[in-house]
Length: 115
Image (tube, rainbow, N blue to C red; front, side):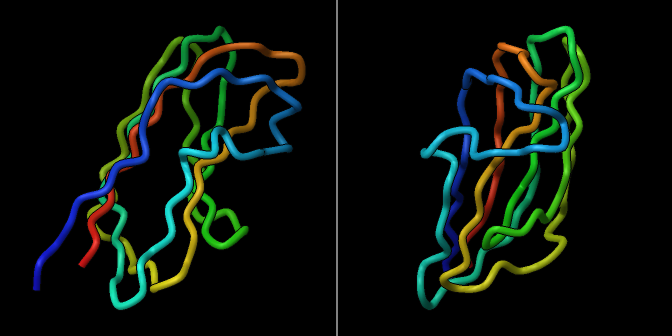
């Protein structure tokens, strides 16, 4: 069985609406598992250029799956080591939550493998 690596990544502007209100960071950070395949999330890396805590949320079919706090002017690397399968047709998205009124930039890199 062949495997294909997929990445949701880039540098994106953030405008905060509150740490309790997450929203899709960018349309390009959406991934749908192809029919006949499964996906496994391998790692998340993120960086925050602001002076405030940000939270990147991995959302699966509209439901938060994992929360990644990224400290002020900090970064985070979380190896997920194939925690669970994501089934065909399921949609993964990267959302962000930030303090109300915050305008900043965030770097994200989510690594997946299709099997």
